[in-house]
Image (tube, rainbow, N blue to C red):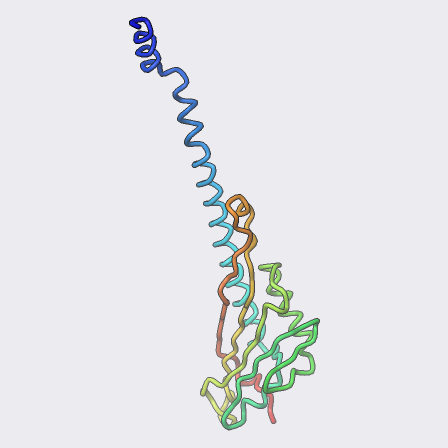
Length: 187
């Protein structure tokens, strides 16, 4: 019995291999933390790219690349004009698309895809509305508020499948800028 107790005391005091056990317990935690940091960084990067894509699109539209015929903004009360594209064809609520709407929408989309290739035409909505700035008889004309929305955009996780995450739906990205009054189509 004394011999067994001596052997147990020696085994308890022996620290050979303790590092391997500690490493085996902490290594998976370090790997998960590293992968989580990687995923969070990629998510933040995609979020920033989508926001930049919406800013690029609204700049493209306000410099004279109207998607819709904005003459209805001269009406009292002015309607909200919302345009989308499906299959390369632009359709607008409360107005007709401009004569070059399909080409302009595709050019705007290509400009957005330079920043974030995952954006497709069904993810983009262009809105024109009256900002109550200017007037038809004033220099500069009616100044419309142009809004670009990116909707339904998803981030695909690289390593999220390890913990059961495949994708995350981003909230809508919206950028609004006052356009140039000279771009409101005359009646």
